[in-house]
Image (tube, rainbow, N blue to C red):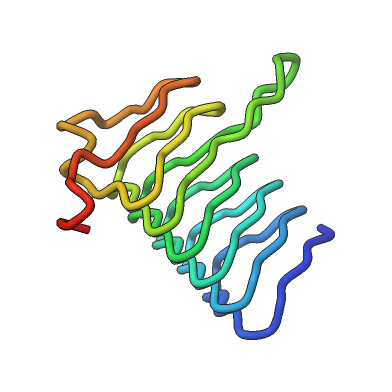
Length: 130
């Protein structure tokens, strides 16, 4: 499949990249799938994660077996957006059209394992705590 993978990316054996753009420093672990997405500098996508129709900003992390975005045939095209330095917890699901703001960490999700379409999650920490 046609993708643009820049110098400095680390794609582990068993990872799949389809119709996506990966910026320098991106790391994709074994078993992870990146499909129809834009991944910016120094993003980490851990093992068995799925990223579809998403934009991930710099230095964000997608935890093991997490799902970000999705392709919904026959429905409106929605893109999941992940902010700079945001962390998606292992096993978490971020539906198409959801947005995670910058600097969000696992405690900011308040125990939620699914972020619904059109939801926007912001960090709960104060600026001096980041």
